[in-house]
Image (cartoon, rainbow, N blue to C red; front, side, top):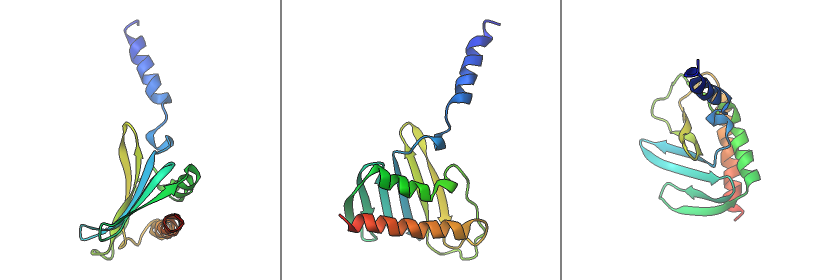
Length: 142
């Protein structure tokens, strides 16, 4: 019985530890690509300097508050920690990902494809448009 106590304690610690998705990410990245080439890339820390990289590789740095980061994160909250699958109709459209980064934990990502037509595709693309509007406002306000 004494040998099982450390195993039981370790098991309880695993069961009570919050999942990675419940821990607030330190940064998030939104990237769009086509044929392997980056079209745009946005990286936002939870407070600090955000980065926008355009198709030509030009980088723009802009301030990001924790509240602004939280608004961006909230747009993708329904997809955080959830696999997104879709039925593709167009196979050579732009594609990309939203990436949640946390220290000490492997990055989590949501991959999407502009050819997606099934499931939550309409909702996801609406959220991506809102995210681009939010990010463009942050970048241009600098």
